Image 1 (cartoon, rainbow, N blue to C red):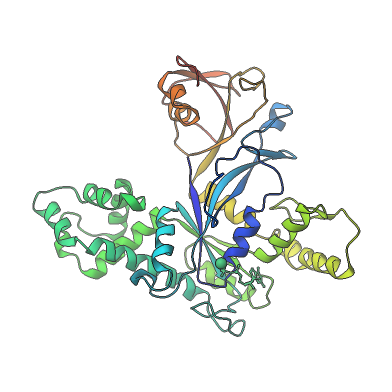
Image 2 (spheres, protein in one colour; image 1 turned 45 degrees about the vertical axis):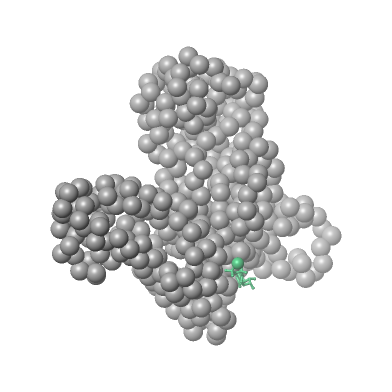
Length: 402
Ligand SMILES: Nc1nc2c(ncn2[C@@H]2O[C@H](COP(=O)(O)OP(=O)(O)O)[C@@H](O)[C@H]2O)c(=O)[nH]1
Ligand SMILES: [Mg+2]
């Protein structure tokens, strides 16, 4: 639980606009888990087709919302400090930036696809800056930062591996646990870098860097939100951005913010992620109407959506491989102990077992786990049963929850 995605990038690319739009929830989600949080942390949500339609019930969501059969599940987003060259050496807000990245499980890299800001984020002639440089620059900053951390006691690390014959994967897991590095990540990165894990003393600095580059791309998966697609110079840069090996999602954060604001005020009927909206209140000036029509014609029709919601959904479902699971107490009428129908949905990592899931709902439920019921098939499931996306699960436990 508690996965978060960092919104990162150099200054002036639209990080705060993206973050404001994403965290401006137009539907009330009653008891979301992030009540006291820092100003640059906020709640956005992911969208998933709700199971209410399939089970043909009217649901009463509690920890999430259901709008026309789409479940909106709260997730945490972080508006990270702007990245400046030399952040890894502590330049600018470098330390704050890296600390925020350290805590994030995945990154949405906002890039000015229009090339209207230079490498430091200062405005320049649209089209004159190559946005691919921004991606390479972020990679370099993160890799150099990792290198610096690892090099601090590299001698000692080498001794542990070659002297005491400890496993490199175990040593680095221990050293870098604060960065979310697991043994498996180290092993995969070693394999990809093609270097000898038994003899780190023989690695060149380049090899060490290659290894850390691979490890970073596993522990901090990243997508590129190609922002400012409303600008004429953006379209031509998309193909180039696509060649860098990251998922690229065309995006117009400004349009999403405008649409969510009008929806909040009841001026439009707009659901984030949708390809259209309706003006519901006619009392708009011709200028306001024209601005909204422009968003429809220049963004929603040609691109399918503003890309903001798509980027968040992609980060949680495709990069972090989360699945949505609905716990219910009563498998017959899909209610909880208060009689609410399908009240909650949990986002959990793919691979979560029935017993782990029980423990996420309540520690007692996990400790006293007897068996579960997969409601769709009415089959009993054991503690090691691996859950699937959109499962509805009832847990039977020897301990009643609190
Ligand atoms: N044309 C255009 N401008 C945008 C878009 N998103 C943000 N901006 C503008 O870019 C500037 C910087 O935005 P901001 O969100 O403060 O960037 P940050 O420094 O990365 O947080 C502001 O003038 C925004 O209005 C967009 O999708 N299209
Ligand atoms: Mg900002």
